Length: 114
Image 1 (tube, one colour):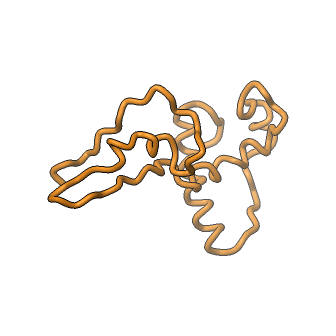
Image 2: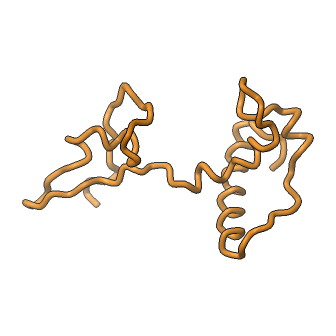
């Protein structure tokens, strides 16, 4: 705990590469470190799949928009979602995380509903 919070390395290139672990995995001297004579590897997946899957409903509202993720007009026309069909575990977790991200997007002024 005396090393928390972990400082992220400076990166010039955040583009995805071939490693599914993400851009931090390319910084080998940061990713792998030695402590008390043992080698460790830091977690490099900073954006788990829930982050990506929790806003796709907004993109579905405006899938052909090449200028922005969704337009205000499409968002107001299609949202809020009033029915979600899926298994109980999937629905609970997805809706929990989707609600969190929707509130973040609302705070940023990117969606009109809270």
